[in-house]
Length: 539
Image 1: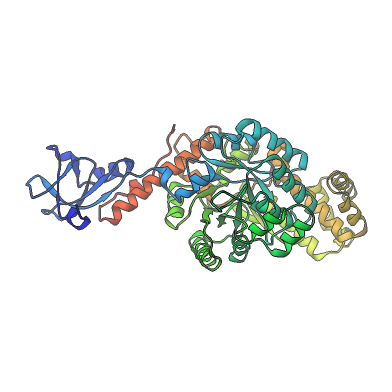
Image 2 (image 1 turned 120 degrees about the vertical axis):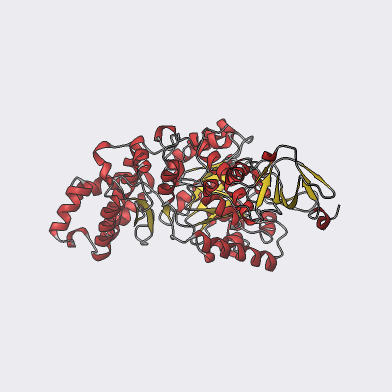
């Protein structure tokens, strides 16, 4: 039957009038039963638009039939986003849990996500090499190659040797997916990981051994990942014996990353960009470069930041996101590495309970992270340290009153004692930093102040009771929206927040909200309750 002819037919329904719904309750039911096909109907008598989940299409007119306005196929949460995402990464859902640093995205969290058909990244950033190595071993034992999982690789301008070592670890041990974060420029470590293992299959198609998920919030950074790896970096890696000539040749024909995560206003490192403005611009850039480069492989663009409710997730997919990535809401779950005290603080957060504070890993560069404000003084205190660092070349030049406050309130010891502890830390991690701090008073000041920032995150992870007002907890506005959404539900209680239940509810709700938008676009009078999917235990 031609399509045009189909829509001139009548829909003959069963004798029960309940099968044709022209009421708000009927529209709400159709939104909730989104896995079933839905017929959109006209009522010639009232002019109303209704919906039916039952009935048969027949030719001709009948007193018991309604004109058909349209047909909606079944909708599943698994079908949201780009279907190639599931095929490429072996997942059931186009949903990723982000790599929250310092091990907050734990191996337990990643394992739970992988077993449930989601993709999770371990939060390796900020951890010592030995701890990352143990995590890789744990995940390999728990999930092997049968379930999807990955790890974080963060740009470390202050510790390039660690970045290189972690990249090498991932290549040697078969970590097949990496979340690349905080890269303002490409480094040998990320280029080597992306290009290592490139080969041609029997049909002449380029096969990638590893997948890079590049987290970006600026078009100029996205461009670097969407282009082939810089020739000079590739050549240097070949010269060092870290890439083969064949890999270098193939690297000229593929982008560095084939999964680009567009990060809008989020917890941790963020440029505070709105997703509705940022995502379309990166999608357009992706298409522009694909045409210019003649790419035959599909590059997927996902969305992150601000995704704490089903409506936000549905909005991301409607903007064209191939997948979604969540962060703050997972940190509040029982599987996260954050202590129960910190998770309880997150559960009380509102939309405005966040603040920008200096980042420990990029302190000297003036880079900020978004953190929780409610219940902690960390944001204000960290900002004060950065202002002192900017204004003074050495500890001794800071006014005595300010020095006394820093020692009493933040360091809780003398500056000399703090520097001794800092030296002990860096002797284990990178002795070169100790030598530089001894010869450069300003760098020494930065290292001591950075020690407070770094330990503030550790205090929150360990639940140090004497340091609760100094907890550094990365958090975006999505946390407040999530708390508002879960209020009164089983997910309101912090001890019942499990990452898989959160993920399932966000995806299930996104599908319900998407169906509500579809029905409304056809003219159905959809009640506001259809856009308010309530959390429920889901299997």
